[in-house]
Amino acid sequence: MKVVFIDYSQQHHSDPAEAEVSSMQSGKFIQIRKDDTEYLIFSPKELAPYHTALVERFCQEEGIEGAYDGAVKRFDIHDPAWVIAGGGKFEIDRAKKYIRLYDNSMAYGKFDPAGLKEKILMIEELSDYEVSIV
Image (cartoon, rainbow, N blue to C red):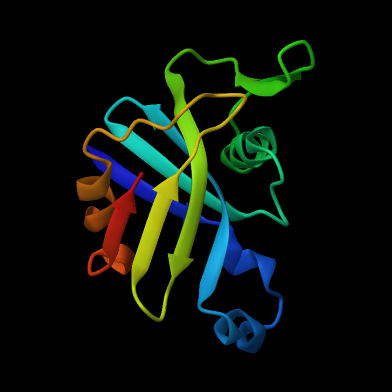
């Protein structure tokens, strides 16, 4: 399986010097799959207070059709080939090379932990991190 890592926290800081001041970041993440590719999408809580906002942003940037469903309070993808596996929260310390994934998404359920540590270690920029999945 191919793993694509999208980290919106880098876009959160307009000043690159500001982004390097704090090596510790936290926020929400979502797991989305299509065919043999898994997308791990991370965003600071300031940019995505809810997982639905994270899914909607990803879909808009990738040109994937979907819509917000107010009845269930989530953004759904129209194409059944795309599967939202779940979501959770993350903490990452870039200085100590540590990442922790935990909790769940109220809209999409708990992320799928099966093989997740190995998938994260396949991502070049995280390949030497200590990974904790709770």
